[in-house]
Image 1 (cartoon, rainbow, N blue to C red):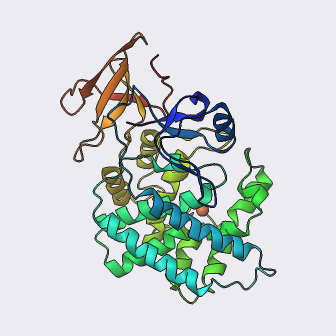
Image 2 (image 1 turned 120 degrees about the vertical axis):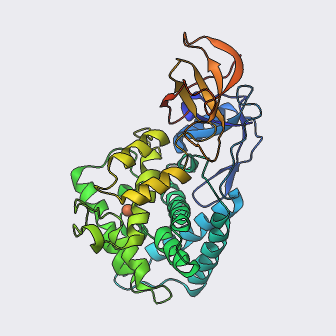
Length: 368
Ligand SMILES: [Fe+2]
């Protein structure tokens, strides 16, 4: 009973399908809450996308990759430690609290267990981010996408835990970037962008001091912006100079970052980002990894709006695991943009119809 809409379409009286959390992981609004004028105003300051329940989306359920409480617990753990470290006087030598290191390792072990039993990711996880908790949501998402790829590649359990740690800490260096740049509500200036790019080097030097974690974890932070064709940073490494884990994290990172909404621009649709990754496969990104990623992460997540080649518009209602690019679509508007009584089209059977375009969030309003 849910779909994702742009917060611009949120109206008083709408029903939230998922709880909303602030950057400290506190529940701001519970699921089932009916939005008031005040909620709508506040939500527009913090979020780009909402998951709502309405008539149009009745019966559609968006499967969560991990349960909300576990996600929030991981985000909160990162947030608390980053905030603590940020306030330390000298950044030259910082050390994680022993409880933090233990906690994160346990969380990554638990996350791996979930991912070992996950065939396919059907939800758009980037839409869970608000403007101020984006870095934490993104870190968790990158760990999830990296693990699904790592599991597909047949990595051992020990290696998968290392990969998960490298992924969750890949942007750790951002902790040392001024908050004004990190959470800026507009595009970065060239100078600010240069500052932001320092996070790879900063994360590396910070992580290699932490003896609870292997050097490999630090290497992931250092190399996740490197690209196969040496077009990346900070060192312009190429091909096999880049560690396999950093190649995995690079795909997970780019995918989630491009889909994510920013206060000054909408995120791209998952399908378009997938196209982008394929266009750079073998050039910037490992070809086999992109191919595998495309099989495990759906291009048209459940609850998102798609336009079909026959001109109709609808919402993705369910997905066939083996052919994720041909979902079941609930048609809401016909080719003349007229509302119709919703009906479903199964693209795995209707092979003459394809998805032409997908929206990063639904632009369809509630049927009155
Ligand atoms: Fe990064």
